[in-house]
Amino acid sequence: MQRLNISSGAPWEAKVGYSRAVRIGNVVEVSGTVSADGDKIIGIGNAYEQTKHVLAKIEAALVKAGASLHDVVRTRMFVTDISKWEEIGRAHGEFFQAIRPVTTMVQVSALIDPQLLVEIEATAIVPPGK
Image (cartoon, rainbow, N blue to C red; front, top):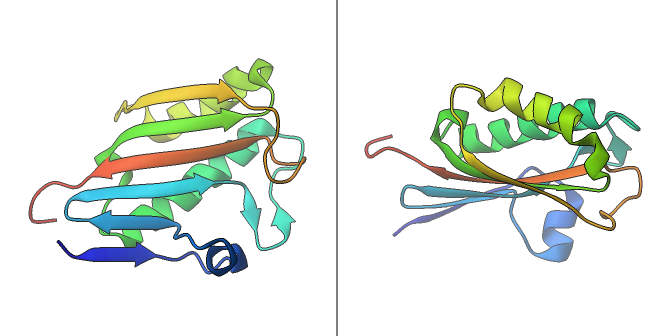
């Protein structure tokens, strides 16, 4: 099967050796995604805004891979403060209310930058012929 690596252009991809997303066949895996654009963190102190930004970045990676949010079957959310679950869940619901992928939300002790509140991964399965 053909492998398609999707890059976001982030400098960390080459340093760490990863891709924003990888498509093999009809499966697309999207890496853990945070609310950063270059060195700038979007939505500092606001879990809802960070989650919205993260999901928009995931959507853009899916489009580059020939997929869409409607193809997402699983998300995994890593959060630094589980008491913010409603804010994070509200943003997730705005993107996925009609799609309803399976999901996990777990609290972690830290992300790569202390100002980051949420990191999300996604798995999509693209219908044949798409």
